[in-house]
Image (cartoon, rainbow, N blue to C red):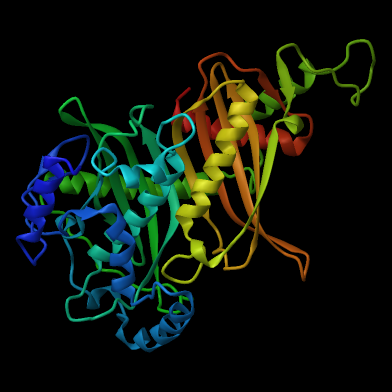
Length: 434
């Protein structure tokens, strides 16, 4: 039985053929007047709407032909950002409903063994929503199909505001564009769940999207964003700050520069604490009490990338990659801590390379940092070509989990593991704090 509140929302949306709104949630339940946008969507219609926007087919064989026809849209791309009209934040506002409480058949897709919601499915929905928000920002009513190929470049952060997601209560997603570069878009989304007569916040998410040409080969310009009023100006400046922070973090990556003096002392202290005092040798190492060597805290998986998991551009859906990486990371944290952990945050998921249909996807999760009840997990994904024997990294995922008890200390043994430890500590500090 469909709940009255969802029926009311759906009926209200059908009254207008245009995209009309009376209000939109911007941050933590705060409402700002928004007069335009997209009518409330059922979650099952998001992917259908995206297919309509780019002219993709639901059939695998037809889909390939539709993507080939997109080459003709190259002439519709803007030559510069100045050629595109500025948009407002309310132009991209999207509201999507996931009626777990009122649609039992839909609920089955989201349930796990413990009768709670599979968070990996939520990640898939967030990824689709971020793409739809970006297309809403770049919408041109004069074009039947969008010439842009908008894909996820980075999941900047997902902060959990509560650990429990009820399997039988309706969920609402809201979001809009908060910052725009020349070819990139920042989209913020909020998820809330109807419980005890009201919608309560569950998570906040920030995604960074990039626009490319119809062949998904080169960058393409997107509409500029004009903040309306001091509140939107503040949100836009936060987007600028996020961009600067990402540049600083990339510059300071341990893959590029040496650790700081403080970090070097941490590594050396870990080394000294594992030396065998009975010998005078750099090679004789002893595991301290209540500790685990990092090499023993791994979990791996493999996926064959079938067409059923493709996105609207004929590559593997980014949400599918996030779900598989999350579930592997969760399983590793569960095995390491000896109990079911709760997700605290998702941080800095980088999409380095698209995954093609038919690829062999190798996933490797590693517990890289622990503190008290917290477990920091890094998941590395790569595609393997059995013909050339080449491995290429596609994604790196960072997850912070919390257990209901203190967990063993993770101890690196090699220099490479020490760098993983420091990288995990950095992500943990960004998420949980010093």
